Each structure stands twice: as structure tokens, then as C-alpha cells.
Image: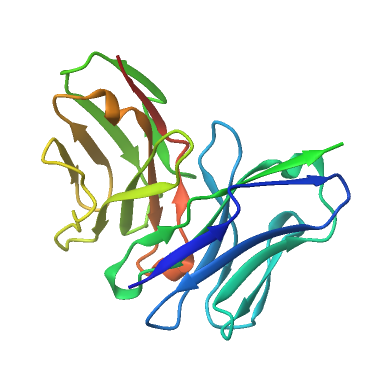
Length: 113
Length: 114
């Protein structure tokens, strides 16, 4: 069965610092993997997705994620944090033919000036 | 429409009352999903519609919860005899047939049961 684990419910970085949000997955089939961002009082917005093409995936707002099969990881990074990046980030894995995405518990990112 | 539309955006109801939450998916999206997000929690899958197939109801927490979808358009999530633990944001999403395309989420309905 597919599952997702996000390490760290809360991450705090300084403006301009590297952002690293961790996601590990479990899947019995080659997975599709996603990162979503949720700003306060809004729905979730797709940041990027891995669908078995390039292992390094670039998304919106300067974020990228690398699929590492050997580590079953799909960590999200951004070289330089901006105040506007403060939000909650969710990693998700596709259940394949069963249809729905399974989401991690989320990581809240705070950016200090 | 251009995005996924949910209504109402906020709903306050008394314990024991029934509520209906509405979702208008993106035109052409055959798949529709409902999730629940409790305060400080992740997303909890509730139900999934795909075209004319029988819905996947495996995430519904009790028989007080039900959902319908008219063809490939509007969906309604109904909660009967609401309880305080039902207070949450209810998120709807839609996607093209294959989830590899990713979901588009609505802004959610914030339900408060008092």
C-alpha cells in the first residue's frame, strides 16, 4: 500500500536561506509523486509532480524536487527562501489504479526576516 | 469553469443539523474527490468519483456522511446529524481521468459545528 511520511511538522528558515522539506514514500508500484502548497485560508495548489520522466522536477516559484528511488525520497528544495514562501506544504503519492492521492501530514514553513 | 468552485465558503451549524456542501469541478474533469482537513491535520480522503463508475466511498468516516455526483459535474457532500468532531475544512478537487495529472483543489468549505 502507498504511504507518505513528511519529516518535521514545522520548519523555520531565514529569508535567503536554503529550504529543504523532506518526504519519503512507500509504494508497491512506480509512483507518481506530488508537492502541494497551501497558503492560509486557501485550497491546495500544485507545486510540482514526478511522473517517471526526469528525476529532477522543477516547479513553480523556484521550487524543485528530486526523485531518489534508492532512498524512496522526494524532498522539496528551494535555494533561497522568500517571505512569500511561508505556507504549509504537502507531499502526496498516487494510489495508481485505485484513484486517489494519499497525502502526508504537511510541513509548515516559516520564513524569518 | 476556470477552477474548482465550492460553496458555501463558511458554514456554521448547530449540532444535530444536516448540512450540504457543494462542489463544481473544472469542466471536462472526469474525476472528483472530497477530502477533510481538521485543524492542524493533514488531508483525510473521504470519497472519489470517476466518470460513471461506482464511487470509492472507503474514506467516509461514518454512515452520516454521503456524497452524490450528477454525471461529470456538480457533487454534493451531505453530513447528517452533525457532531462537533465534524468541524473541519472540506476540500474538493477534480482531475483529468488519470491522477498523474494532479488535482486542482477548490478553496474549501469551513464547517463549524456548535
